[in-house]
Each structure stands twice: as C-alpha cells, then as structure tokens.
Length: 238
Image (cartoon, rainbow, N blue to C red; front, side, top):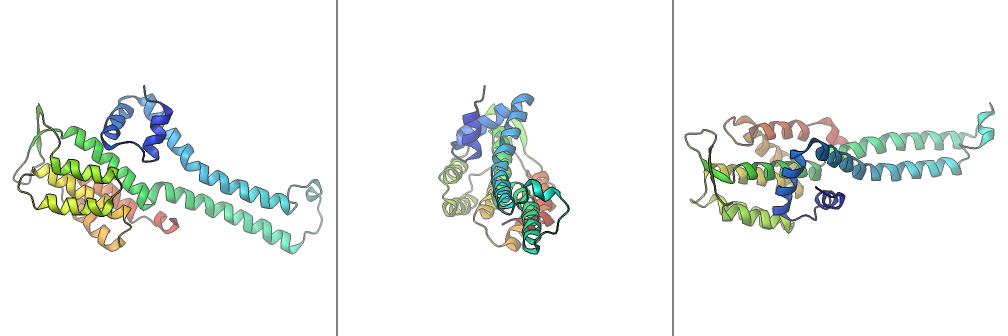
C-alpha cells in the first residue's frame, strides 16, 4: 500500500532513484492507486493556480466588484471596469500558464521522460541481447544494472546534471555496454538537457534522431515527446 507521503516525495523529487522504480511499479500495478496518484499530481499542480485565483478575487473585492450595489444598473468608474477586465485576463492567462507549466515545461517533460526510463530499466534489468539494429530480446534470467547506468542514475538523484552529462559521455566510450544500455543513455541525455534548459534547437535535433529511428528502444516515447516539445502550448511556459 503506497502512502500519500510517498506519492508527495516522488512528485517533489525527494525519493531515491531505486525507490522510484519500485514506486512506479506499485502505482501501475493498481488502477485505484494509479488514479489516486494522478489526482494528487493534479492537486499539487492546482495549488499555484488556486493562489492566483485567490489574489484576483482579493483585487476584485477591493475594487468593490462583489458589493451589493454593483448589481444595480449604475454607471461604473472607468478605472474600475478596466481593473475588472484586467483581473479577468489575469485569470485566463494564469490558467494557460499553469496548464502549460504542468504539462509542457522542460521540468514536466523531463519528469515524464525519467518515469519512462525507470519503467524501462525495470524491464531491461533482465538479460538483454541485441544486434543487427533489432530491438533487444529479453531473456528470463535477471541481471543487475550496468555500473555505468547506475552511476548516471546516482548523479540524477543528486541533481548534479553536469555530472550526468559527463557520465553519459564516459559511458558511450565504453565497450562493455549492451546496445539497450546505450539506448538508455540516449534517453537520459535528452532528460538532462531538458533539466539544464539547453537551447531548444539542440534538444529537438536529438529527440528527432530517436523519433526517426524505429529500431530505437525509446522510439515511441521520443515521438510523443517531440509532439509536446514542438507544441504551441510551450509558448505559454514561463
């Protein structure tokens, strides 16, 4: 049984890497738990929006918008009308920015990408054999994570993103990696570049490369990410 505190630790990035993998497995194993997790995630995202609404409501009260005499058909002060209109616009744009930030910001995209990574690492913690450009075949016997992959995950947990990039570069130079692990590194690179807010053009080109490679382990995730990364919603991300 997953507690609400564990869910909040995951959403706030306080959960350790190893525990995050187990956590996601437990969440996805139960439709009820999965629904509760999504609801809590939505509530967390809505806190910012609600605070903005409260601020706008306070401004409207100060302007006299909610006073009883406002219900009568009487001339209104131009400044008061302007204030109310501005407050309404703030409310609309607050909703747009909140929705965009929760679903399309670099941090949100990276969070989703890392969730996919942890899920796939659980699957490929089994022996994986690949070759000739084919997706890796999974054997039944378990294998531990490659030390290179583990070191990158540890750097992610420590939020040392520059170290993550260095570890990825070192990992690619190794001849001890399975092809599927190299694909994990490709996906990790995208997530860390998002978290580092690297130039959009550079990040997009890397995403496109995987999205075009139908043999890549993360092809489907890359195509989904590319759609979000090039979405007009990102125009509203602060």
